[in-house]
Length: 238
Image (cartoon, rainbow, N blue to C red; front, side, top):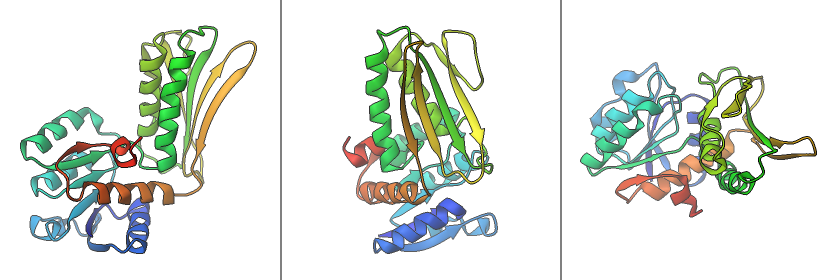
């Protein structure tokens, strides 16, 4: 499979290594130094594009790539207020699009456990929930997209929390997300339910970027011959 990489930072390079190992070809690598090469003529040489940049550029990159009618995998976070607009564009163009706040296979299994645990804890009101996320200091958005996904799953399943906040709160209807930026840290996400009697915790800790990169390549393999909007739950058949 021929892949265009929109974003060639640490994640882009990790994706490249995994893709090459799985027998794929990288036909285009776009970073800040060669933005002029981000053209339809170059992108359409690929069968799938993978976009991993940052909140400052993701929306325009995704919009541009979908306009070239190439299946697109996006892993950038911090721009999701415009995600519905992008989905509408994809549907209008009869395109192919996968977005996930996290492509790690382990994290997506963690998501399913988190949803189930929130439902189980809904009737146990003596337990207070909290989300903690730890990333490296170059992580530009806080809370992380993964932490937001985790928090929104808890809000849906738990019921008694109405919104999430990115600070310590004494409002019982607010779910705290505590964001820490520490080097080196590939990414840790923890959900903790605390009571005066005991604590219940689920934790996912990434050891490196390989899990995220592998998931992005699996998503590209999945979407290659499909039309529509998908997520990692579709890719992993969870």
